[in-house]
Length: 494
Image (cartoon, rainbow, N blue to C red; front, side, top):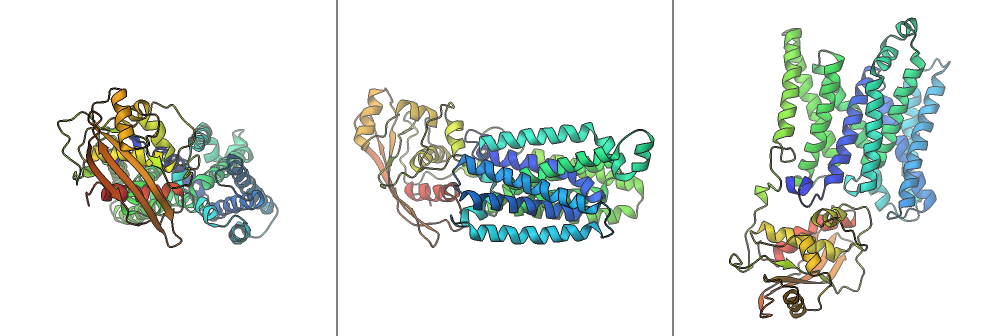
């Protein structure tokens, strides 16, 4: 798992880091959301942001691979979030009605608007719904950079003015006495909330944003003896649940966002139970409980397969049987030639999906246009051979030595001999790659291992069985779900 996230493939780097940044900022701001009893605001604003995204998709017709549409959706989220926040704050001035009334109404209206805009979208609601629920897997490099800039700015402002925000939140009269302006501190807090929610909803979805605004803070405030420790514990819980939720979702094939929120809910329940026990023992026990909780979270993060306790490429569970592949222990490393596309379809992978990371991470960074399904399968073949204990040239080395798509195994052997490759060459031909309406991937991938010196076929294999991809909503998810099964059949290791 470590290799998948931060190792040579770095397949999920953007998803993990993007989700972690959103969780950290939301968990810190959430402490003030809970203490100021604005939990309903944490529900209503993310839903307003989702309505803004759906409206932007409806107005633009939504072409998911279009950078302009993505930027328009972010603008829609920002406008809707800050517009809703402005309406709520304006309605509170001089109104005798409780603030919860307006927040509840905003949530109901935003929820209805989101559903209606999705239903009206002429491009269909599948990918719109996919993005609205916050597909972290689709975070591109540009998205990650935007999240990083926004998160760093929010954290710097938060910690720089934390005392002013604290005074304005709990003792505005004293703040005025010492020359501070509570209105400005409130405005800054709402600005941070609005910006964090708008960006977070665009990348992680309203459920994740609301969950991390509330649950880590609730858990921290149950055991923390002071505000400083509450902020530290809330941030630690957010980090643990974001990274741990991603790992659990990957292993159990579950949606990432709800899994992370469920872990945060478990932390809250556990903290509540510990707080009840500590209350019977006094303040000292409460401080010890908070310290123990921080130590436990740090140990879990450090000892996780996602943490730093494992070296690069450590993935013991990934070792697989060789299957029908020949014993190549005495031969030089295998080179994987570019796979042929004989489907008659371009099979392009949209820009910004996580499989783009394979190209950049396994190569020296020389980006080439037109990343396709055969390219992604070639990259996966390198990893699958390595997992079976076979020495293999890296993706970058194979692409550099064999830059052209060979017409046949013999052509691949000839080219490898010309460039001085002594080890066998894996030739692949993709003849079918179609997803049915029932969620089955109909695939045919023919593979051949050829000796460059003699052009002798050392081994042949094929994958032809349908693969279930019912839980996949995007092209990248289809490949992530199906690629291991495809090579398991082709290599005869299942």
